[in-house]
Amino acid sequence: GQSLEQPSEVTAVEGAIVQINCTYQTSGFYGLSWYQQHDGGAPTFLSYNALDGLEETGRFSSFLSRSDSYGYLLLQELQMKDSASYFCAVRTSGNTPLVFGKGTRLSVIA
Amino acid sequence: DGGITQSPKYLFRKEGQNVTLSCEQNLNHDAMYWYRQDPGQGLRLIYYSQIVNDFQKGDIAEGYSVSREKKESFPLTVTSAQKNPTAFYLCASGPRPGELFFGEGSRLTVL
Image (cartoon, rainbow over all chains, first blue to last red; front, side, top):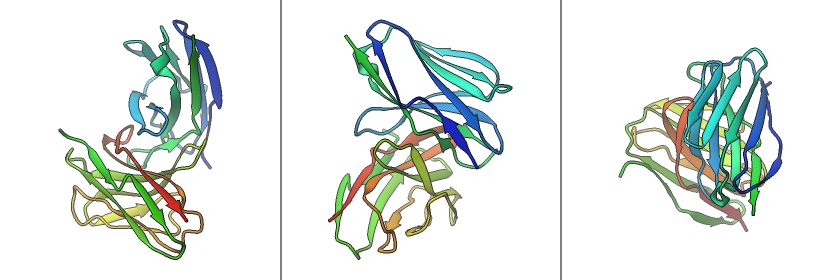
């Protein structure tokens, strides 16, 4: 089977840095994606890591360690609008659809 | 503007009725997907299609059916055989499997 584990909830202070972890056990692995979803809205793509290391896009960064079956999403300079659910998702082969984790609900407080 | 359009946004169904959710994209993507989301849960795959006139079952296909007669369209029918259809349904398409573009979703409630 496929399993992705991420914390269900995280709370952080505005202006701070928060890290959302994702560990996976899947039959295959091509890459790890991250998506953001505000309440009632559609998920939006944030990043995709196929190789080990850190990828930075503005305030968001995503990290992957294939040997540890682990990745994380790093959000810096948190803003209230970052309050949302964040999902990691694994691409298990070349053509099969993404497998999603259950999501981490991030609450940013003043 | 390019994107994915889902309709209706809200839908109410009586038990025993079939309903069809529409999904249209003008992004010229070959692959299209249907996911179901329940409160506090991740996205679970219902069906996907990688090319016109071809589609595959996902993890929770029972009680659902799809068609892919045109590249732009991938409608989902929720049949009366689906025992717990109340959920948020998301359609997506993507140029690459790791990167998906989602529609705004359809919220189905069974009365």
